[in-house]
Image (cartoon, rainbow, N blue to C red; front, side, top):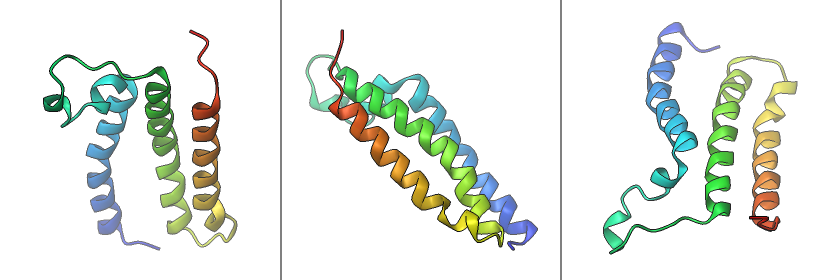
Length: 104
């Protein structure tokens, strides 16, 4: 079990991470081009698959982080498999997004 001070520090470090993930989910086009706009003369257009993948990974990480922290903070052995299940769900979701056809 983590001490109260460790939990406060973890929470403080997670605030900017969640802010970035929320921004990435709400504005996937901008988050894809962070630090890369200088490479293009014109405004690049990300593909719909890239936008869907960015939104999916942002949402999965926002959902997964609390469960992963909970699994490491508790002594319940069932929760120890949760990080593996979340990684498996991310891989399956990414494959579904990348393999699916664009219907636009």
